[in-house]
Length: 291
Image (tube, rainbow, N blue to C red; front, side, top):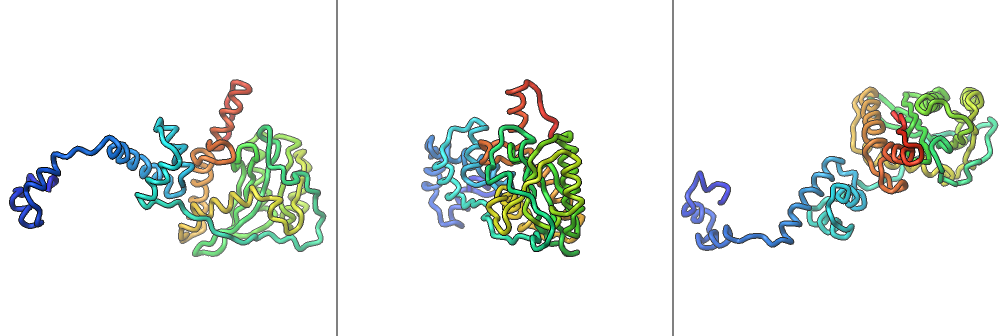
């Protein structure tokens, strides 16, 4: 009624809507409480963050984002408002491992030993492969992730799961990180990682090869966790009509969103590249060129 009072009379709307004039005027003079005003404002901010991140953020990340914007609020309050607004973050699903470890190629020892902590960038990298369905057929995504910041520093996507796929991802990481040496590069025992081409690349660049024990997904859980994340937040929500569309979508997610925007719980809810920049500035007074 308030919204349309320039078009229709209060008397007419009261009659049509079966609302008393006195009841409407009493309502129009009512002022919401300070608590209600505060909740209304918070609801708008929560909804905005949820929308900007396309439903990928749940209570912890939305709370951190609100606090970064200067909003004083707790996780419990954000949880209550999200329930009130019926906002629910995308739920993670299980997916299968695609790499083939049934081969007779030589394997490397497990240098990482599930120690996923790192003191600096380019100390420990992890790698893995997963799959993406498109209307033109399967695509395979290989990634290299720096354990220090959880940044994806190398990746490659192709229609075949070959040794070239993992070598391309590693070459991207090497180029982005300006060819560091003595980095532990961990993977599973897939034939692509045991191939002569991949092993030759590691050796030529002075990198230390590390591999999970056969069939033990926990030995490479950080890399697998990334695939859980990208599948939940992006791939499961998409229907890719072409391989090119999948490549573009994954490029935007990794390079524009995941590395630069998405807050990661393992690094104090900072975005990976922000975490690296802050860390390097605090130690050296300079910034990294992470892409």
